[in-house]
Length: 507
Image (cartoon, rainbow, N blue to C red; front, side, top):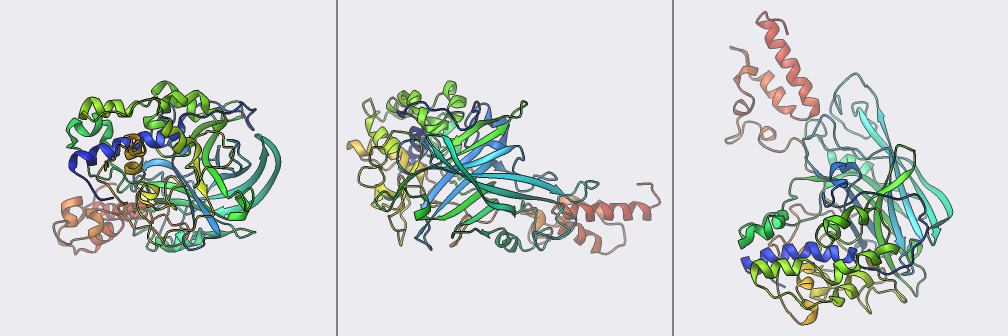
C-alpha cells in the first residue's frame, strides 16, 4: 500500500492507536487465582493515570517475531521507560530493583500463561562520593570508570492455570548495557552493546539495556485527532528518545506446545513490591496502544492490573470502540456498524488459518505462528499487504502498526477499503540485522555541543567566552567541549576552577 493524502495520513495514525487497544479489549475466560497478588497501574507510553507517574515500571511496547537470521528461533522484545531523554543525567535510566519484569507465553490458546521468563535487576555503585554515572571514558562493561552498573537474573517459571509448577534459574548476574551518556564518556557504545549479549544454555540468547525507541508514530493524535484538520501529521514523535529494552531469543520448540501447534501468545507485565512486601502487577502490554485508545479512563488502571483470562470485562470497549465515532464526528468518515465482531476475530483470537490457535479463548496478547518463515522483503503493513510474517501475526520492529490498525478499525475487513495512516512509515534509525535487532540508543552528546566548532555551532556560542581566560589558547575550551557527556562535566569544572584561581578569586 502506498502513502496517502494528507487527510488520510492523519487519520491512519489515530486509528492505529485504537486498533492496538482493541486487542486489549474483550476476552472471555474463567477467572483464576493469580500466581502472585495483583492490583493496580498501567502500561505503554504514559497511557494510564497511575503508571504515567512511575516510568521505571511502565511497559511501552512488545514485539514478537521469528528471527530473520535464525528462523528456528523466536525473538521477543519488551521495552520500558517511555521518553528517555538521552542527556537526562546525572541519574540516567536504570531498571527498578523492586520490580519483576515478566515475559509471558501462552502456547495453547487458553489465555493462561504456561511459561514465564522473569527478569530481576540489581544496581551496583563503585563510588558513592561522586555525582557521576561514569568517572571517565568507558571502554567495557567492567571498566572501573563505569560507576553505576546493573546486573540481572532470569528465572523460568512453568505454570498450569496460573499455578506454579516449577521454577528454574537460567541466568545469573548478567551485565546490563548502560545508558549512552555521550561520545566522550562512551566512545564505542556498539562495543558495550555487544558485551551485553549473553548466550544461555539450550540455545537461547538474552540482552538488557538501553536502545532507541523502535516505535514510530505521530502522537499528536491526542490534539483532537491531529489538530482537527490534519495539520499535525508526519512527525515521528518518538524520534531521538530511548527506552530500556529486554530482548530474549529462544528456540521455537522450547515455547511451542508441539510441532502441530506452533502458535504462541505473548505479553509482558511489571510487578512492583508494595509497602507490605508483596508484588503487585502495575503494567501490562500485548498488542500496541490498547490501553491508550480503546479503554476509557475508568478502565485503564484496572486493565494494567489484570490478566488476559479476565479480559471479558473489557469486551464492550472493543465491540463498540470510541475512535471511529470520533473520526466520523471530526472528519465525516462514516464509522463501521457495531458490534465490531471483526475486531474481536482479528485482535482477540488471531487470524483464522494463520495465527489463531485451536479452541482459542479470546484475550488480549500478541499471537505469533512460529512456523511462518520470515519474509525476505518485509512489508510494513504486514498481513494487510499479503505479508503473513508480519503484524498482526506477531509484531516486527518494522511493522507500521499504526497504519495497519487504523485501516482495520475503519472497516478494511468489512469492505470499506481505505489507505489511512499518520504519514510516519518507518523508524528514524535503521534496525540491526542481528540480535537484539533494536537500534543503538541516541547518545546524550547529540546536538550542537557534540559538533565542535563546525558550521554555525561554535562552542563559544553555546557556553560563552567566559570559559576561556584572556590571552589563553583554546585548550581548556576544547576540553570542555569534548566533555559534553557526564564525564565531561568534570572537565568543565576543572577548567572553571583553574580560571578563577588564575584571577585570584576563591572558587
